[in-house]
Every structure is written in C-alpha cells, then in structure tokens.
Amino acid sequence: MSRQLTVLCTNFENNGGGDPAKRQAMNERLVSLNPHLIFRQEVWDSGDNGNTIAHEAEDILGLRAWLGPQNCTALLADPNVFAPLRQWPQTGPMWVLPPTALLMRYTPAGRDSLPLALVSYHLNYGSPTTRQSEAEWLTTWNDKQWTNPDGIPVRVPALLGGDNNSYPVPGTPGDPPLPELDRIPNRPHRLHRSIVGPDGKRVMDTRPDEILRTAGLEDVARHLAQTKNDKTAVAPTVDACDTHGPDARIDRIYASTLLLAAVTQANVIDMTGLSDHHTLRVRLDSTTLTDLLNQPQPTPA
Image (cartoon, rainbow, N blue to C red):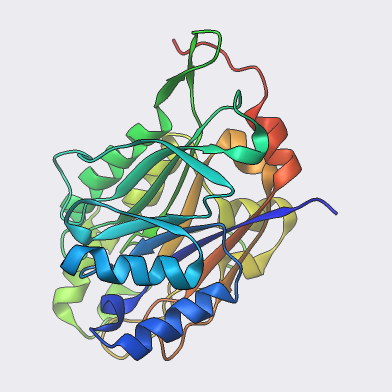
C-alpha cells in the first residue's frame, strides 16, 4: 500500500490558556493522529522565554516548529519528510494575525522535485473588510516561483491551512448551511461574519473562499465532497453556540489544483474539551504526490 501523508489544521484555543496540562493533552492528541505537517493557529506565547513552548511541542510531536511573525501562527513539519528551503519573515502589510509561510521540499519526491509553498494562516475575527484583503494577499503564495536544477524558473504549488472566520460558498453536498443572520443572537458577531450584498442587505461572508478559489486554490474538503461524494469531508469544524449561531466549517485547507489528484481523504477530528475548534485532517497519497511534483512544469508567463 502506498504511504499516506497526513496534514492537520489545528486552532488550539488560546494555546491552552497557559495551562501546561492542557497543552500536554492537546499535543498528545495530535501525536495520536501521526501527522507529518501541522498548520497551527493561536500559538500566542510559543515564542516566549526562548521559544520554550514551541520546543515543548517539538519534543512531544517529534516535529520541527516554525513560528510566524508575532507568534500568531505556526507550521510544524516532520524533518524526515520536509526540508525547508525558504521562510518569509515578512508576509505582507495587511495582516492582523500574520501567517507562517515556508517553501519546503517534499523529500520523498527527490532533490529535483518541485518544492511546496506551505502557509498556516488565521484570518481576522472582527473585520470582513480586513479578511478580504488578507485572503487576497494569501493568493500570492499560489504564484511563487523557484529555479529548477536546469536554471529555469517554475511556478510552485501551494498548500494552505487556516481559520477563515468566514464561510464556504454554499452549494457543496453535505456542507453545513449558512447561518441566518438575524438568528445569531450576538449582534456584534452578526457584523463580524457578514457583509453588505449588492442589494444593500447583509449576507454571510463567503468572500475569502471565493477569492482563494478564483486564484486556483481549491478547498480540498469541497473537492472530495464533489468528486467522491464524501460528505464526511465537509463536517463542521466549529460547534453551534448560543451567541454565535449554528455549526460551521470555518477551518479549511486549500491546495493548488496540481495537488488535488494526490488528495485521498479529509475528515474532522473531535477536539471537544481541548479547543473550540475541531482539527481538520487531510491525507495525500505519497506516490501520487511524488509523481505530481516531478512532472515537467511550464515556465511562468
């Protein structure tokens, strides 16, 4: 059987709120999922005291950690599977919670293979206008180039995971329905999660999803639901609550279209008691991914 690459997207609420036992429990839960790559959000204090908490996670998970600007997001990767080639310490001017962005080689694919642009992100909670700008900036990682061994610049594929604080465009079988704005009791939250539509009425904010997909970054869970009728892929990642409305699929992983053929599974891991977000797990077939990363690529226009 071909090996599977396991990727997680995990928003750990307030990084455990300063509770070492809760951090330990979350890290052990993640270890049980055997990840090779984790997109993390809310890593606020991981860079304090000489990156003590980041190193704690590395020790338990057996992964190497990279912290983004201001300790808002992080990327953790298996050093036997991913080799870093470049990190972007400055990720653009529009971020409230800056992403962690690296260019990495998938080592099973070989030294001459295309690298991957890997980005862990967290879109703004309170401003739909800011989220739109942040999503637009995210699309630039689907337009990065790398010089191949023949000295030719080629465009590299991207894999991004994060908390979108907004909704997928409706229409995917099994997707949670969009909330009804006037049934969200918390009125500020109505503003945080909606925009004014063309007719002047407020509608739920799906613009980040539309922006990313317009730029050729596909929601992998949507892809599986539509191509394989796998409705478990689009399970909610945030549970209903009295103030903020119904279940929602807030956390998502997006991939360049080149990578979609390697995606075999997406499902949501229950994190009740550990976080207010559940963990999204995506699996890719290693053999297929290796083949895709070694296909001849056209020179960027």
